[in-house]
Length: 484
Image (cartoon, rainbow, N blue to C red):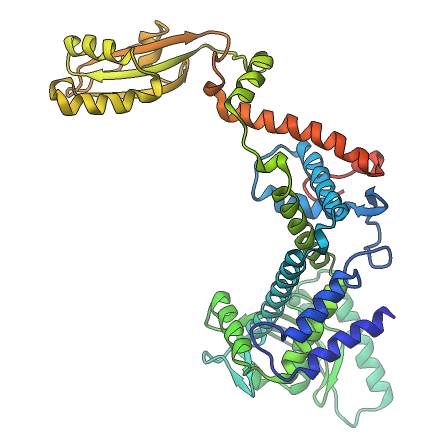
């Protein structure tokens, strides 16, 4: 049944005559609906061998590979420690499960966005596939090639064999070519194999790995083998009117960048000008990759889960409500010991001014204002009284972080050389030996910790709504670098 449904989707794509920049609405909606039902997503039948179940939430199984995929994407965007990855992933999956429980996946907004996102992903895969094909072969459409006369970089072994060769000669030729194929697959260098068989007059070793060769100079059978052999792979032994061959494609010299080719591929699809038969083959391969490629399946799953998690957060007071200052003050008071310091700090500022007389005036003025207002106060003072021109640096200074603070506040180190325009420097503020005296001193950390504690409490209650099984023995084998 799965194969029949898959072929049905592919046939629908072929029936659609136009190939625009996006799949036609009929095909897109059918394909995305097909993905949405699970037919093109990972399940018990399609999961890769050895992909162990990490956990289940209300019976929905989550494989190890999904955590690995989540990690790879998350690690590029955040700097959270590795030990936090599973907790973050687990809460993410709980959000998704709760969103489904609340029927957020049944809303029109969700369904429309999901179809659009999946359609865009599939379109991108098709364009990438066409781009890779053009870059590898140089073929544009209708017999046209990239204007730079592309060349293929390739190594070819040919056993010349007459078309009138006897059965014994054919068997002997096949036996030799099989041995050569085995040696190349075992890692023997092309030149090494050439040296081993240098006495065989029937063998020709053609190495175009550096400068390449135009495909128009090659036999059709060789060009056909190039198109079905991935770059860097070894082809099977195949025949032509010239004899038997083995080849190893190493890339293509196009004269243009991969980015240029990618943009060209996108424009060709948008214009509907690309060769129909080639594009059909690329569509077919794309559909097959969606079925068989675990990375693509995880990308599709992630699209849906990300959208559900986003909708869940938008509809949840935990994320939508603002944190009051009184809440942060109370939280800091209860957890003040968590923010203690190993080294003393100085809270205040370093002021550079013209003279001791102006220093006394500035100090008296600044004492009447909070530290965060000092820059503004000095700017006003300078406008009204230019002789009180000064520079100020405010903040929370750890001992050793500022030489002026070290010398004037902590009585250690040496005084830096004074700047001629501001010959007098003084500090204003207070020393904090054990830790901050206000949550604002470490506001970012307090807010993060407050949110994290709220999340823990919320999700502890949330997980009680679901039947959750976490396989700790499997979790212990997961390496956050992406391998088990």
